[in-house]
Length: 205
Ligand SMILES: [Zn+2]
Image 1 (cartoon, protein in one colour):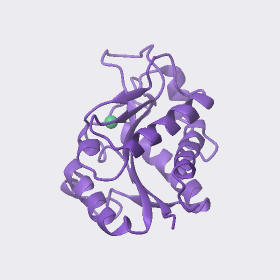
Image 2 (cartoon, protein in one colour):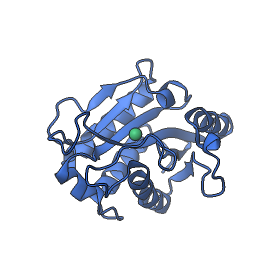
Image 3 (tube, helix red, strand yellow):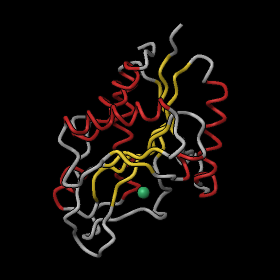
């Protein structure tokens, strides 16, 4: 029997900690990814795809509770129970930034899986690549599908991906990032990629 789809959404950074900021100070990574997550969650739920958020911060302002390791432990604990009747994925949301100071030419999204990832993680990465290409979100860099042993990718047990949602240091990318709503291209592309993945592995949609 096929399993129900379930997404663990991870907001990358705790409030104000270690996240990127646009050169004009208008956009902050931790806020932008929460806006993307808010509308994505609504869209997924309407389509019958359940969502859990790895950050407890609405109720808990303790930064330790929002720590990378705590978020992985939380997701793994959920997964140990959810796995019996759900197809689970972990999606970590970030924005990219150029190393140089000020506005950058670099633009576009990238999709990261870890070097020892499962076949399903690669399938998920393929769905992301196709859909973000379709919605013209790959920007000016080659090779959006990346391998990186980021902490949350290495320490989560379910298929997992980390998405860099455009460059917060690129002016054109910031136009997309500053206007997040349910019709925003990023939100729509995430929804399409996640849905495409669950369809391709035969989840019960
Ligand atoms: Zn980040």
